[in-house]
Amino acid sequence: MVRLAKRAAGLGIQSSQINELQQQSQAVLQAALNTRRSVAVQLRKQGQPAAALALLDAALASGNQDPWIHHNRALALVDLGQRNDAIQIWEQLQAHENQAVAEAAGTMLQRQSRKLLLTLHRTLEHLAAKHAWPLRHLGDPTSIDIQAYAACILREAIDARNFNHAELSLAMLEAARSTGLHDASLDDNRALALVNLNRLPDAVAIWQQLTQVDAADIRKTAQEMVARYGPQAQRLLALTKADQLLQAGELEQGISTLTEALLQDPECLEIQERLQCLVAQRSQNLNGPDDPLSQELEAHRRELMAFEEVLNTLEKRLEGDQAQA
Image 1 (cartoon, helix red, strand yellow):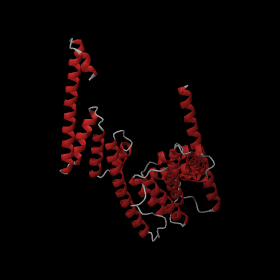
Image 2 (spheres, helix red, strand yellow; image 1 turned 45 degrees about the vertical axis):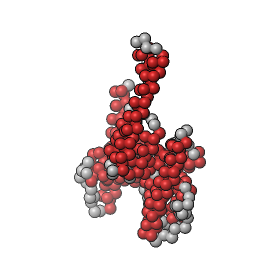
Image 3 (spheres, helix red, strand yellow; image 1 turned 90 degrees about the vertical axis):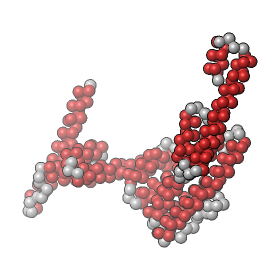
Image 4 (cartoon, one colour; image 1 turned 60 degrees about the horizontal axis):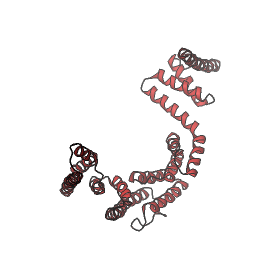
């Protein structure tokens, strides 16, 4: 509109005529928008939500931010099975200055949130039955909001973990997350369940993400857990990666992985022993002699080969640093 007014003024057109042109242009644009929105509604009602969504996305891409476009996008997303994305749109529209838009968003938000919770509730009941777990804390999904229901899930998951049902605890928390319930406390307890299941690297990965959250208590706890479990998680990652490389026939890469891990964690006996086995395998001396004296010498030989591997790696690293300098 501003561009049109400047061009008209440059042609000597009077301000009253400019205003009239602006009004006409605005009317044309609004009519086009209404037509596009009506077509999108018809497409959705005819069972073509993807086509409706594409049409509405094109309207937004052209710079039009009409709130009803967003509202209709959310309706199309629901039909496409993307209820979480739709709920996020309505959560934003609920605070819109247009009262009609805000009321429509509030109505849809309540309706779709209830459907989401009912679906999640059925999933949790199925998981509990599978593990013969009596649900104690889940409230009525038709009478409480999402945040209150998330708190119920958290209490249920903590109880399950405390009673040695870490697998169920994790399954419930992951079901909540996949439904769209993203909460730092839920993620913290996912990590605790993973620890109970001996999946330290996965648990530490979650806590590393939680060190960036706004909630100070969760952030502090996450930092403490990373410090506590991080080193052990790194050892497991290195050992697992080395085993995978060995199974893939990549012996040298496996040795390199363990050598680097040992440089980072020189006191880890498990990495030392695994590295000794791999360097011995490389020299085709997996089976030592039967007599005790020879077996003792074989153990020392493996230690020396592993130590030599570490020294070679350090020398290469030093040469690389000098070359860069």
